[in-house]
Amino acid sequence: MTQKTKNSRFLIGIAVAFLLPLSFWLVINFMSKSKVPRAPKYFIAEGYDAVAKDSIYHKVQELTLTDQFGNQVSLNKDLKGKIVVVNFFFTNCPTICPQISRNIEMLQDAFRKDPKKKTTLDTSVHFVSISVDPERDSFPALRKYADRFKANPDHWWFLTGSRETIYNYARKQLFVTMQEGTGGLDDFIHSEKMVLLDTNRYIRGYYNGRDTGDVIRCADDIVILTRQKKQRK
Image 1 (spheres, rainbow, N blue to C red):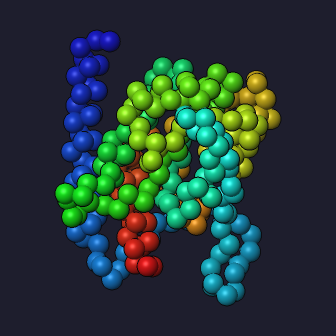
Image 2 (image 1 turned 90 degrees about the vertical axis):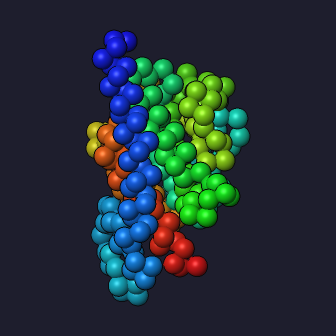
């Protein structure tokens, strides 16, 4: 790695570390307690709910996989009431995946609960990184990768499981790619997208996990969904 590359990564890290907290402060201070901007919903299904007076949006279905400790976990059941950010990766990825994981690590740190700070945001968000190379990414491999990015398992899962199940979820539930595939060994998805799901499992945002501005936008939308959740209580 050249000195120029090292300096560039250092400056990006400093920028994100500074801009994320600043972004949160701006959102919290400029959002009225009585009125919170709404994050959009994605992928309207055909139909209209006359009772709710709203379009019928796509609702992400359940997914059960194996986490970095070998436990079976369910995204909707076990994370009920949680805001969820999902991305897809593989542990042998040399460039794109580590960059995204570093940004998620900073998001994890930004949203952690600190009892000493009364203004700390509610840690109702959970990060989920799903392997697109499940044949090689066993749960011990995932745990080693998770440790590399200081992942707190209470707030960040790394998941593996059936390739067909994972690829179907990526394509048909989260729509991270429009390219068709069978989920077989010759099929491969490599996406930079992070997908934001609200507590009802509606898709509320897509973000480029390598782009600092998009990571900050994701953080802002998490804050908005958190405020909306608190208002409903």
